[in-house]
Image (cartoon, rainbow over the protein chains, first blue to last red):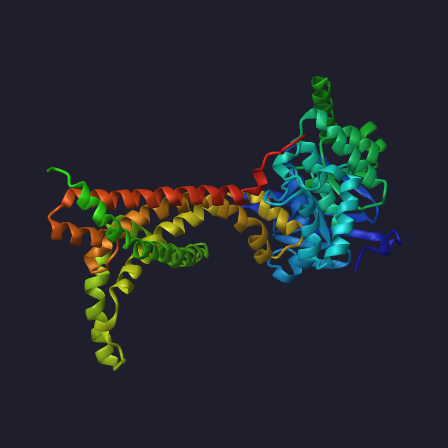
Amino acid sequence: MTKAENGTDSTVMVTLRGIHKSFADNHVLKGVSLSVNQGEVLVIMGASGSGKTTLLRCINYLERPNEGEITVGGFTVRGGRAPKRDILVLRRKTAMVFQHYNLFANKTALENVLLGQTVARKTPKEQARELSLRLLERVGLADKINAYPSELSGGQQQRVGIARALALNPDVVLFDEPTSALDPELVGEVLDTIKSIAAEGITMIVVTHEMSFAREVASRVLFMDEGAVIEEGEPQEIFTRPREERTKKFLRRISADWDYNI
Amino acid sequence: MFFDLDFALKSFPEVLGGVPMTLLVTATSILLGFALGFLIYSLQARKRRWLTALCRLYVSVVRGTPLLVQLYIVYFAVPPLLHTLSQRYGLPLKVADIPPLAYALTAFTINTSAYMSELIRSALSSVEAGQMEAAQSVGMSAWQSYRLIILPQAFVEAIPNIGNMFLGLIKGTSLVYTVKLVEVMARAKVLAAYGLRYIEVYLVASLIYWGLSICFEILFKKLEQVLRVGSRKLKAI
């Protein structure tokens, strides 16, 4: 049951309708709606506290939305009180890459990539192992498969995190500020990895502050402020001719940060 | 002669014979205490107000009263209670046949469970919230997440504290002679009274407790090393 306005029903991968989320008295999301087509890379930007991370975490129900509707790959879950079984199905259609990597600390790199497949999706061991090895090679960590997270650098951990997400063959991969906890010199290797998988046509929603990344990779950029979407469009358009004053202000600020970093 | 070495040496094997009973009480109370402690923790985690309050009260009372008193209460209060109950309801229960070991284990299990429930809570909260989120994000059920990710990490964190508790209990079992259970301390007391040689025998008992403690200290260290896989250092880079 997706919108029929552009006649591309079959390719809509993610739809959010009227998502509301409050933490106690704090109304963080005020009715956010969006849709992402198959193969699209949606980048969500906005000041901290604008609700972008909360929105992302609502998509796989790590935060329970108070109201609204989430559809991923044709499967719909409502906010409020969704049954546990539905939440599990939703989570098995999505994968997430975390800001602080969150690799399983008691498992090796290979096991981290393997576990979701064998435990949650019941993929046969051999098949899962093969895919895991292929993905770890793909993110440039073929020589680290038996390393524990504590033995890896931040950039390496995040690349394992990306392999772990891809191994699930999800309908959409959610990236929650995947480079903001990294040392500056490690940001590049992770962004390059994300860019290369974006080129493969994997549907992604990315919360990030990396403007140059958004400019290069995003099919669409969406700006949030105070729990609502204030502007969205193609990256060229939105970065060069933002319409909203709040967008302009935000862009000026992060461009200034950019200058300071150099 | 102030110190009779010969008597000490001769009493050593006799006192040592109490070690199996000491270890039986310690190990059983740790295991049963862990199970009961886990139950208390999970009841508390349910967030029903009266249930939480009840568990808190239990933990507070048990931790706030001496182990010896608990042992006496179980030993002296439970038999008449059981006797009355079995008479009223006609249960085929011979209260006099209940061995002292049962009372000792009951008291020690109750005592251990209160500390255990707190230990379990702190061990679980030491695992970062992100670990649970990651497990959920790859589609694991709650049970799968706990079994594969959370509990193994929490257990490693808990080992040093379980070790401390174990050492404490080994020495704590020296109280069970008061309920007619014959372990290291009881044997020492009997021998000392028999030979009127107190210092010698208590010194022997102390050495045995110390020796046991050292053994288990090493054992728990090793266990932690083996299980703490995630922080293993690279051998070669």
